[in-house]
Amino acid sequence: MSDDVLRENTAKWYVIHTYSGHENKVKANMEAMVQNRHMEDVILDIQVPMEEYVEEKDGVAKSKERKLFPSYVLVKMIMNDETWYLVRNTRGVTGFVGPGSKPVPLSDEEVLALGVADKKEFFGGFEVGESVKVKDGPFEDFVGVIDAMSYEKGKVDVVISMFGRDTKVELSFNQIVKI
Image (cartoon, rainbow, N blue to C red):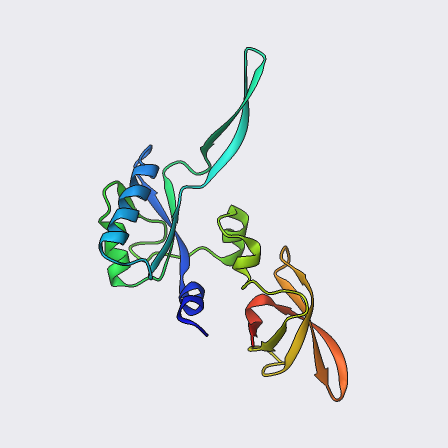
């Protein structure tokens, strides 16, 4: 597995609370600090989730954008002392979302629901017809071919050869790796 793939799989999304109206400043400041300290390999993405809406004024409809979660910024990073310190000491940040001083990463379902990750990339960029190895569960170490995928369910159908017969099994994306 390449370092980029390993880094991408290790990094998690965290929610950071900011002063109201400072979300974009926090994002810009954090991006500058990451670049200055050469931490692009541990802090991978910083986003202020936005949504489009239509506002009608004087009979004219205009498409506009607004913050989906005012006072919050999302950061994809590998949590360690250095990244924790950088985030906590960014001007405008009041802290991580989570109990006490222990940041809690978002679950895979929450990340997908927020729409901050492309579903295909999020699930490893697998494709139908691709050979994979099962890395977890009762079919561990079996090799098979992807037959179908459901990003919404987070499931993949893999055809494996068992006792001389092709058998279709439903697995989670996190149970397989590319070979």
